[in-house]
Length: 485
Ligand code: NAD
Image (cartoon, rainbow, N blue to C red; front, side, top):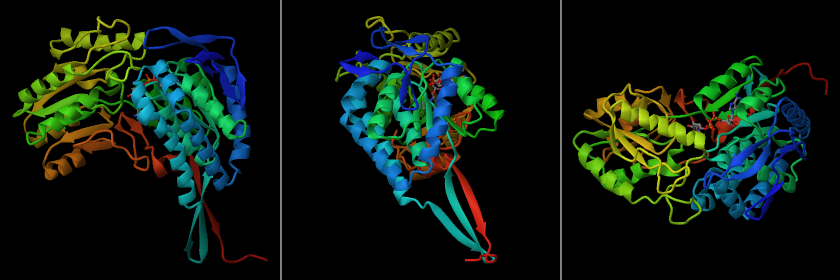
């Protein structure tokens, strides 16, 4: 237990409704100044076992709880989150360095909305469907699958966690959440909120720890019946291998190198504004359109106007209202980003601006960076940097734009800027991705499908896609004969 910004937070696991401490701990570092803000219990085999055992017991109770009661409890959780928006926002900012103003205004209210959305989903969706075949009744039910393991990254911790927690609970499953070791704190506050709301013990559990240490013990436990993971491609492959031993169904939301395509007829003010958004959260956004593909007829003017606009972005302490770009999450990640940039420079990619740590601010701040690159097989064009690093390339004609857009192993998202509805429709149809935004970015309804194609993911989240993943859908067939009542 410790104090953060005057708020008391437990740094231990939350298992079966109780706090459980480990003998080993790891440091949780604030990206704002590199200080150690907490020493967090580091789980391993033992804690994983305890948590899944608690989740099994929780499942017995929660899977039998009527839909209406589940919905009502989820709304209570949402209400408590709404009361605590400011503290959740501040703790998340201290923990992962994202902007306080966006945590307060959009992220935390949407965290509450995630619970409200799936509470409403429970009330509005059918709990069963019936149809007849040759006089036999097919009775289809959405049965809770069992304890679900949810594993999350650090770039938008509570938001991404609750995208999974809310549908898993709505479907009647119990949950074991493994937050990222780089942003473990708001999950711990959420655990207290679920207890305060009256969620039965064992229905929601949090195991803290280093992914490689505790992850395989959780993933490999055959009592886990669903795994929903958001994170990197290499981790997804490691999880898939372990999960395969038990044939545990997995949903994967992974990385991207999404195209941001500006056609010659685009509204340039809009294109520049949307391109600036690709630096949101200092590029630590899976959906970012990090490859700026620009029609050759406007390439130079676009790069000039974009470069002038980037100068106006203010970098600094993410708690300050006027700041647009905060720090990167962790020293290791900062070095990883810088590694990509220095290799690109050494390989002859043309640096337009940025290209280094921000020495004026020190710490974990990296300058927004843009390369121009013609070689589409180069590392900087192909690999996800997950930092404020964009790469631009010109194209000639719609055909080439589509071919370039589809030229990586990823398929998460895409942004198209054009004034032609015809071009928008064709390119949206032919670019391989889970989400395409036309003349907009980041507009997302929780009822819409969300996920990645190719190496960007397996499965879809959102609305019925999330809910169904956490269910065992069953068909009970009733014959017309043989009844004695
Ligand atoms: P990561 O893969 O390193 O870690 C994600 C989580 O997996 C962490 O909680 C970590 O502790 C855990 N983990 C690590 N090794 C494990 C193992 N062997 N078994 C089980 N769990 C293990 O990813 P990250 O660095 O936290 O996040 C950045 C990545 O996430 C980027 O690639 C980004 O694109 C992706 N991401 C995708 C989406 C999406 O919705 N598609 C959203 C956000 C982030």
